[in-house]
Length: 126
Image 1 (cartoon, one colour):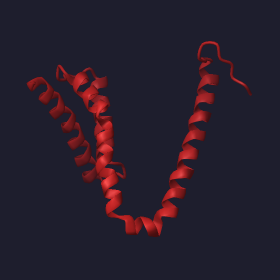
Image 2 (tube, helix red, strand yellow; image 1 turned 30 degrees about the vertical axis):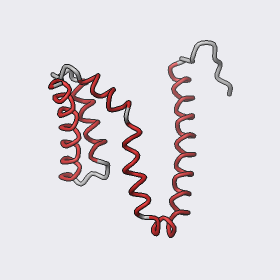
Image 3 (spheres, rainbow, N blue to C red; image 1 turned 90 degrees about the vertical axis):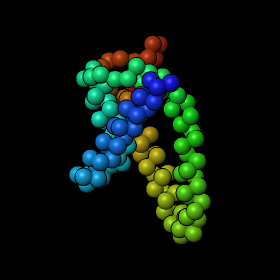
């Protein structure tokens, strides 16, 4: 059990580092995202890590949907603001989602053409 706590503390440490870096530098990205980038860099260097890091991370990912509950509660607490700005927010979410899908598809097409790699049995239509 202590190995899991070590791994969990390791992950939280990177979240803390990311949050501290973002607050200190004034970078406009969420602290946990910066922490994740630091974690990826650390793991990419084959630096020391807790024994059960993979298992701990998989356990957290398995229960990721629970982390949406606080976000939903936060939305309910701001229903009056949502009534005023809901249409603008919905438009922004829909437009950004469509743009993300288009950019993702175009990136896939470009990468297939650059690398010449396609999933087995598939053809790229022009």
